[in-house]
Length: 232
Image (cartoon, rainbow, N blue to C red):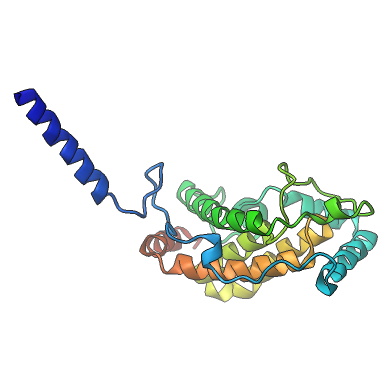
């Protein structure tokens, strides 16, 4: 009987501990900046309807870039194929080299949170990539492994979120960071793996995601930590 009572007490304590665990913590115990944010909870217009004027214009622009892109354009776009802080902003990073481990972990977390939300919307809109729709289109960069959906562009979204994050850390370099984020987005069209409306939506969605990140006390606290790591 005593053992049974002890077991009940232990189980009750475990239940209370589980209930007391902050909702902001993810499965791995790491703080989640946006635990309650989902793709459809943020405002974003629908993908262009197939055959609509915007959709037709999208394909024409991708074809135009295909006809005029240079090997240098493709090399740059290809170097950004694997999305992340180093690929996008490593060349203009305000942090010491090599990137401090704490900063690397921070940007990895921002990337994971961004792609979680973007991935939900991609599955909702289910828009095929341009080369999957028109056999005359030939990407000059590696195509996504999953050969997945096109709208909104995850690279463009992440590029905008990272650009805004860096701008908050070093406001004097905002124009430089935002320009680099825009280049990352455009390179997805130049490379032939996204429509122009995909990257426009991605940048808009990046603004929305950054606004949500900025509401998070955990994100703001980590941003302060990053500020202390900046190169003198």
